Length: 90
Image 1 (cartoon, one colour):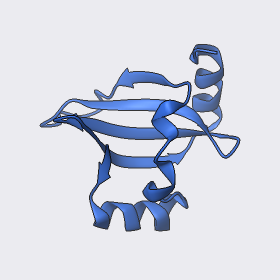
Image 2 (spheres, helix red, strand yellow):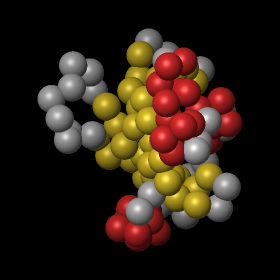
Image 3 (cartoon, one colour):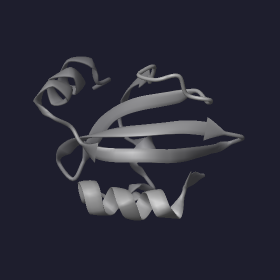
């Protein structure tokens, strides 16, 4: 099940124009995932790249129990788009 913090959902929509509520099936798509080690988080976080509405998006998420908890989602920049094209499983 996909979950999120409602305040983060609203902030993500305002900052990046992507609503977490629209991402319910995104984890069924071909995806390239790495562990997010950009900071010392208290939980294990992942960075995934996939196509959403014909654009590469970058999802930051964690797993809690059997749920996927979204933390952030934004459109990828040129470097991230290139990385997705080179590494995606399709």
